Structures are given as structure tokens and as C-alpha cells.
Amino acid sequence: MVFLFLPLVFVAQEDAFFATGAFKPNPRHPYVDLSGRRFRVGSIGGSKVIYARCGVGMVNAAAATQQMLDVFRMIGIVHFGIAGNANSSMSIGDVIIPKQFAQTGLWDWVKFKATIPANDVTELDFGSYDVPNGGDNELGSIGYSTEFFYSKSGRPNSPERTLWFQTSQNWLEVSSSLEGMALEQCVNASLCLPEKPKVVVGLNGATANIFVDNAAYREFLYTTFHVSSLDMESAAIVMTCLSNGFKVIVIRALSDLAGAQDGDNTIRLFGPLAASNVAKAVVQFVKTLRGFHFQLSI
Ligand SMILES: *[C@@H]1O[C@H](CO)[C@@H](O)[C@H](O)[C@H]1NC(C)=O
Ligand SMILES: *[C@@H]1O[C@H](CO)[C@@H](O)[C@H](O)[C@H]1NC(C)=O
Image (cartoon, rainbow, N blue to C red; front, top):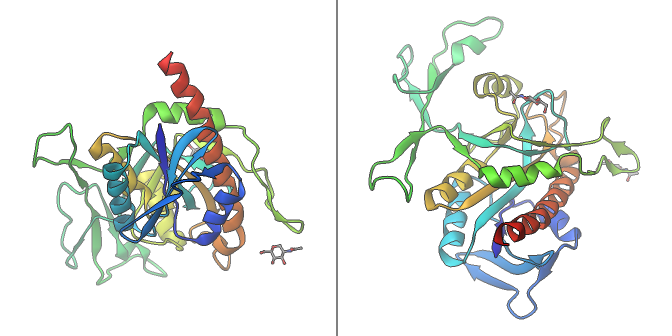
């Protein structure tokens, strides 16, 4: 049985993953290098895993995923990393395991005063964000378009138009056993979060090639798409896995408020804590999954 992880490129996140001590490298074949990425071969709690860093953004995420699925014998992908928090009822340090992701970066940016294409999902109108009050703005508006989803099970050359990509239902059920697990609350002796972080399963996430650090846009995404996490890779990985018929789950810890904070973005302050919480959750998930597949096979 083989699983895989693809975290972001920040070295701190990788350090937190290896610091759990759960990943045991294969002593004879510890890694394979392909197209500039290192795919580390090993195990966690007796399950074979391959671990790689995909890099930032949707192109890296999709390319690394496709390569992984083509080259190795995988059953699915466990993707993890940190994310911006778009939901004011969630807190920094929380671990989110969404049930679905929208690709919110496929845009029709139309001419000033033009209407957006009829089959776009929604509209972002710059005029409504003028200060002090809404009015005309030459940036016009953006229509949110849907992805072209090609899949093994679909008709050739007939992509389905899709906004949402669902993570695997039975892996999501397995992950619900992580709710209530202990997570870290303090970066160090003097810097702690006000509340104990928690694992939350089943909300929505958004992905685009955009690092969001803007309160107005965060609010737009939350009220329009009802998304709780914002990142730059997840939708690409979920879509690529589903296209190829593999299982997939995404585990992300919230490191910042995506622009809703006073002052600087807290990713530098709380990024390491988020990285360590997500690493713990991933290890716990892989261990739980082993039990689940064992039960299925007997
Ligand atoms: C705790 O971490 C913060 C943020 O990295 C740092 O500014 C502060 O000096 C640290 N405090 C101690 C006691 O290590
Ligand atoms: C925001 O987070 C809270 C707490 O986890 C959750 O109950 C709520 O459903 C979330 N909002 C949306 C729109 O998903």
C-alpha cells in the first residue's frame, strides 16, 4: 500500500513533518529524483509512503501529482500544508479537512460596463469596493468560470464543467476520527493562541494562484463560496486525483487570517505552529487509515 504527501515549499513545514519522527526512510532506496523533485520513499506506522514537496501554485501541484500517480503504485494522495483562514468562526492553528474545493482563479475579466458571460458562477464587481462608496471603476468586473474536468470515467474530449472538486468520501469518514485530537497551542513559552486548536472536518476550501492578504477579498470569498480555507494548490491536486480515479484527501492548518488581521500577516509567527499541527494530523490520519484498510480486507 502506498500513499503520498505533497506539502508546500516552505522548509519549516517539511521540518515539522520530519520532526514528528514518524516517517522512516527506506534504508536501501531512500529516494528517487524526477524532474527536479525528490520523492522520498519510506513508511509511517508500517504503511508504505512516498513523500514529496510539490512547490507553490497550481501548476506545480498538478504536475507533481500526475507524475506521482503515473510513476508509483499509489492508492491515493494525502495532501497537506498550511492555509489562510477565511471563516471567522475558525481560529489560527486549527486543522481543516475540507470535503470539497473550488478553483476560484479561473476568471473572465470583462470590459468596463460589460456583463459577465451567462454561465459564470458569480461576479466580483470592483465598483462596489470603491472607497468611500461604491461607484464605477475602470477595472470593471470579473466573472468566475468553471474548470474543464477530464476524467477516466468521462467521454473522451468531453470535459465536464465543474466548480467543486470533492475529496474522497470514505477517507473523509476516516479523518473524522481525528476530531478532538490534541494539537499544539503555543509557539513557545511566551507566544500562545487564546484557545486550544481543533480539527474540523467537512467544510469547503478555495484554491487559486493568489496569496490572499486582503480583508475585502477574503470576505467576498467567504460570503460567495462559503469557503473556510484559502490556499494555492489543493483544488489542483484533488482535480488531478479525481481525473485519474485515485483517492485524495487534503489536510491544512490555518496559519493566518488572509488579511482580516490588524497589522502584518501572522504566517511568519504562527506558520511553524500550523505546520507542526498539520504534521501531527497527517501522521495520525495515515495510522488510522492503515487500520481502516486492514478491516476492509478481512
Ligand atoms: C517566541 O516566538 C516569537 C515569534 O517567533 C518570538 O518573537 C519570541 O521572541 C519567542 N519567545 C521566546 C521566549 O522564545
Ligand atoms: C465556519 O466554521 C464553523 C466552525 O467550524 C462552522 O460551523 C461553519 O459551518 C463554517 N462556515 C461555513 C460557511 O462553512
